[in-house]
Length: 408
Image (cartoon, rainbow, N blue to C red):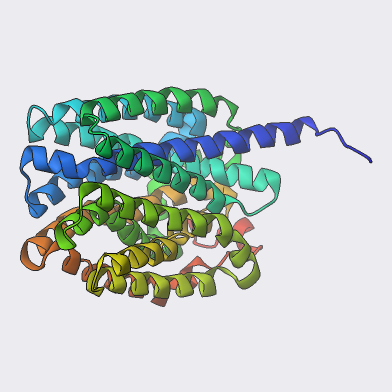
């Protein structure tokens, strides 16, 4: 049997691949750990659905602030330093939210603003690194990096369900989680690869000003709207499934968190096995089919007669939304020279779903119940199916000819 010794470049790429998986995974753990304790914090602060929506809005507001300039930030400091710094900030923010709710709404809102800022910049940076690694290994693995995020969210949700069942205080649970996430991420990203072209391109022609010019690209904006629709479906599931189960189906908090875990597990499976479907059938047909599955899952969750159909709906909902965000990131990264600014634009638009989603669902929940308010999500998912042609891979010649006229 003949064995070959990996070259230095292959060894570096493998280490960067593991580090990128770790960055996605720990980001997921932090996100779902917070989400798993939303019902308890909601009850402690005596928040109505609309008021809870406004509190959750602070996460999206912080993310938007970070995302608008994150392309320039990543281009200047690199994805490794950006993720490490944001992991440290997220640790402080999550620990602040964990203790701040004892003192009122204001400390929670401030902590969640910082949480959103850290999460937004972290998100762009790790997606840029994911594109770098994807090119280095020569395989389509971006969706599997996002599966790593989903694995983290499942782990965080299941741990959250265990903490709720065991009556572990919210403060202890989230503070310890914050410390583990921060330390583990900072250690892991030491093996990130240099960003290369993605790092240098945005500085051509004037730094931040040059980066903001990518907001004029029609394809990039359409990809952003596509991502927005799937982000709304994904974010609504993360923020509202547990509460919808508790309030709409009269389940216990543990059952509500379990439904949340089912949603995340389905999303994880879709992201892990989805790349094979993308390679075989292409981005557009696969994502249109997943949009239909998302609508079917939402319909079962909203209109199903019992808890069992709600769980089935959560499963289809998670499966259907699985590839929307990662495929959008891949579409934004088709040209490696401009990956950072385009990912920044697309992620910024996508995060508008997290900005507008919580208050929208909360407002509608006050009038029609939280479960029925989820009907609004299906409208944007249908829109995503209609504009899915925007995510077609760029032609090989386009990546070398500045297709969107950024230079002109």
